[in-house]
Image 1 (cartoon, rainbow, N blue to C red):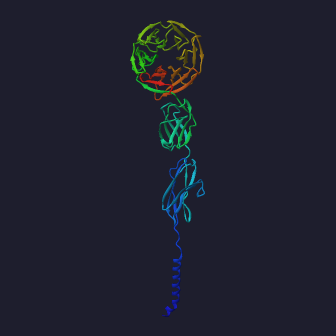
Image 2: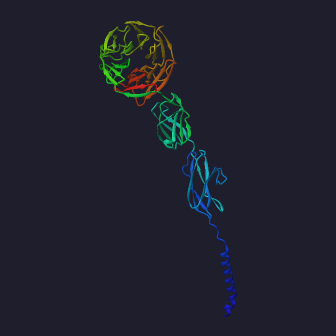
Image 3: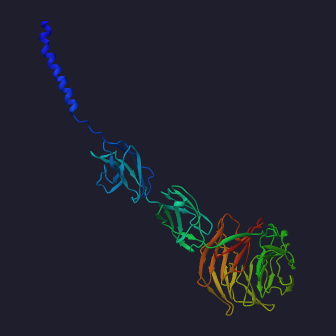
Length: 491
């Protein structure tokens, strides 16, 4: 009893403190709930755009009056930063995002999600991202091509779809883009590009990249026609009269026993071949031919017994007949002679000497010496004859004065087949792996490379050329070649 009396004051004191404490706790106001949020890693980072993402984790008392993103080039951006986008009030937790445009390519940015409530503004974590650098073109292949060819462009930052990509060759836009990856674009060369040097421009999502080197656009389109029906051969003849072309003679194998005497006519209107009357002079390899007033003159060459021939015959396509003509005034020497006509007269130039012979009304006359003994080919534009030599020299012949003028040298590989169309001369390059065509413009004495025939490796010296209506026709190949092509140098 005495012990309880002694401890009673202590118990009463403890009870008093407990009662006061509970009362004070009931009188204190409750602490308000706080808004919290997170910033996520940005997505869809591009040259000048990005998608920003964040999430409200908890909503503070009174709700959120504003939320969104702030960004800039320095860490921990806030509402005073250059970049800000408000998404307005938000009443509940959840994710939110915003697509930003107008950024600078190749820049590093910092971003934070923010939310404002009655207690102030809070921010999520600082996240950084770097926009993609501008696209660049490092190279392209091939460096020269024509309409319809495929070009492969190499570079960086081509991260786009074909719909987001455009390519120009000079000022002409491509209409067909085959594929696009981050480092490579495949595109088809369009029609209408300016001939010669052009820059290639790639536009990737509105950002341009230009090539530092020039792409060379080559004019010329190739169309395969019906195969030559006379069979493969070399050292044949070819010429055109009116709207028809002709190929014949030559030999079908390496030995002269395979020498031929046939003649075939091509009609481009119907894409058909018709065999005509055989050459009456017998089988002949490396004969020469020229045309005067719609009559073809064919002669010289070597027969199947390896005998060099001196005869000439004339062919009239109007009635498909041959008639013997005056024999050559000089001495035939296989295969060292070429023929041409100018001003209504025929000419034979010797390619192993400087002899030039003219025939007029059946009479052969020796003319002044040629400027070279290395003649490779002859051609006539209008009423002017030209000769081309194996050392890439070119001369013009003045038939009236029987004189020669030196012109600009050719810089490619030598060749020995050429034909005139549209007032210009077209040759097959004899030193390339593909079938390349060169154009010579006698008006300004300029050589231009034209579009070749890719994948065709037969040399022009084994082919036959003729022209009809300003288009060039070529029987391509050698002992195995029968393919026949039309070349339009203007497209």
